[in-house]
Amino acid sequence: MVRETSGKVTMEKLVSLCKRRGFIFQSSEIYGGISACWDYGPLGVELKNNVKAAWWKSMVQERDDVVGLDASILMHAKTWVASGHVTGFADAMVDCKGCQQRWRADEIRDNKCPACDGELTEPRMFNLMFKTFMGPVEEEAGLVYLRPETAQGIFVNFHNVLQATRKKLPFGIAQIGKAFRNEITPGNFIFRTREFEQMELEYFVKPETDEEWFRYWVEERFRWYIDLGIEKENLRLRQHTKDELAHYARDCYDVEYLFPMGWAELEGIANRTDFDLRQHSSFSGEDLSYFDEETRERIIPYVIEPSGGVDRTALAFLVDAYHEEEVEGETRVVLRFHPALAPIKVAVLPLSRNEKLVPPAQQLYHELRKCWMVNYDDAQSIGRRYRRQDEIGTPFCVTIDFQSLEDNQVTIRERDTLRQIRVPIESLKPTLDAKLSGEPLDVLPPGGSYWLGFEG
Ligand code: ATP
Image (cartoon, rainbow, N blue to C red):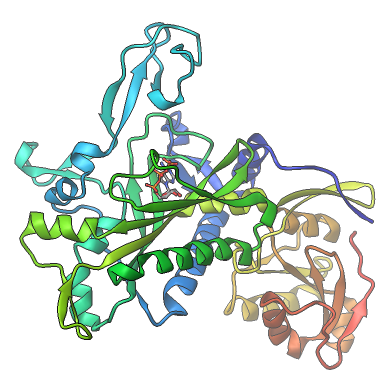
């Protein structure tokens, strides 16, 4: 019998699981750590790559109207003057005169330090961009910024892409890459960090069609999270109020997720109007207009921007996947990742380390890992090995036992239901392929059968 025993996972539990199993480590831990930076371990890098691949597949690969880009992190300093970041990308900050801690002014209630109730300084504006210098001399002329968003790399390449691809409106340019913000109050694990990755699409449309495309992208982006397994009740859309809107935005919705600390933004979808292309035209002197062949006029396209964070999204998938259950009197922790996101797709487990079982199990492992990330594990009891795979979210375990040596069949055990089927080895690969693409376990290949498996 399987019984769910816990509600939402706490952040402490998740941080500890992530460290223990190699998803996420504190950066520079041996030196005492560096605040708000995290390193992705062997399983974390797989999860993150899978998040990015799922985004790229739905935003670029499966569409005719979107192409990709990978712009450099360091850009001409004028970019950030034109975009408004040099003057406007700042948060109001206050210091506590007692304990010296810094806070974002908009997080303060009653004008008191949230940590010690001490008196606070007057708010000062603090620009969130990291500065560095290009070339050997640290002088103003060599000043460059680490990009605080990937979007501007797309805008400054608008004409290059247009000319290279001959795309017609509406069309989009997608990019995934690092961004840096010197956040005043980072925290909540990988939710708010100073170095992170963004997944951004700039979708260029004819000005009068902006509202229609805006609605389209809000729905499309919401659906993406649901399709990848996020529980509907943990996801919501929130429209920005007029005073929350960025100065360039006409409308904006946030996709929010119910994290352990409450509802928080995963992604923003904004109607940025023609602000960016106009600004870069004016600051660079390059004409960034588009020639509309139907009306024979030059226009500045409007832009709809779905902008999400890879790390925040990975955190939401981790939180949502986490379940604690009671199975036959014992607790099992299971990450119910969508197969597309699971770091390891299949584990190959010989029933024991018996010398007859290991060679065929190894052979199977070598065969399967040509297709997917596969684990091989022969240490300890089969039950404990199943639990280890559950805890990292591996959707399927394949077990070779003594009967396999006689009938050339192996068992496939499903993570979520604990049910097993037995299939001929020659149909293992296509069967796993189908199951990983969502085929129910009940659908059996020729020669397959249901199996009363052992959980150990
Ligand atoms: P917030 O209000 O949480 O600071 P934002 O509205 O400033 O976020 P955007 O500028 O819209 O964020 O950036 C788009 C996306 O990039 C966010 O939805 C988020 O997923 C991600 N992101 C932004 N800042 C950070 C950060 N410091 N750490 C991790 N991800 C971030």
